[in-house]
Image (cartoon, rainbow, N blue to C red):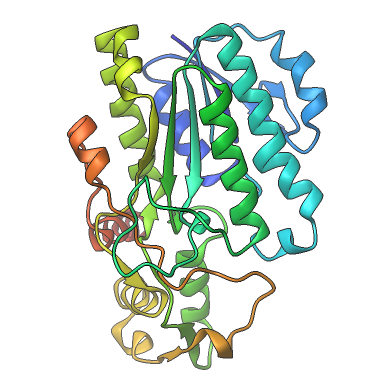
Length: 299
């Protein structure tokens, strides 16, 4: 099984590459020095000729323009990466009838729901990032053949720029730590999401092409429980640094931390469909972050 993974310099792509390389022949694509194939998603038109030179059995796109605030000004690049490049990849896979696996975001919702979002709920992105990711989802659903879209949220890993590492950095500095307390979501570790992806792909391999006819589609793949950024921060600092420093974390409303892009106040997603379709569920968010922090402490 030859797998093309795009975005291996990112948190999720790196985990996918490491896990899948034990099961299949992995071809990495992106702009990193270690990538086997140079693929610039900000230039979608140029991608077509490069893809034609690659012989693969499935494509996994873990790349995205994720600078949520920067996207408000850099609309063209965000749309090129999150929408147009995804359309090129979906077209490539659809023409060959090979599986396409893509990742989306909780930011396609506006946060006005009073219950956990399900896959069929109406979307209404508040930001350029959310809108361009939604357009990528729609391109995948309309163009790709066999496909899986895993919609996730608040992704972090031990390496890279993310909320967990930012909180640990602030814990080591002096002064109060002020964190928004009125935005609620589902923290999800990249490694756990990659493991879930691998298990789903193993099910697909064991059941043949007929499996894709009944399982292709959109799934929410995130922690099964939720928390606020404030409570997330307190737990990370208490577990990864010290309870004393965690006591310094101060809750603030979103209004006191204005950003160029609006975020949904409630981006909690139901994972019932995922569990019913595949018999799989990610660990609770505390279990995910505790496991990662324990690994970091061990060095």
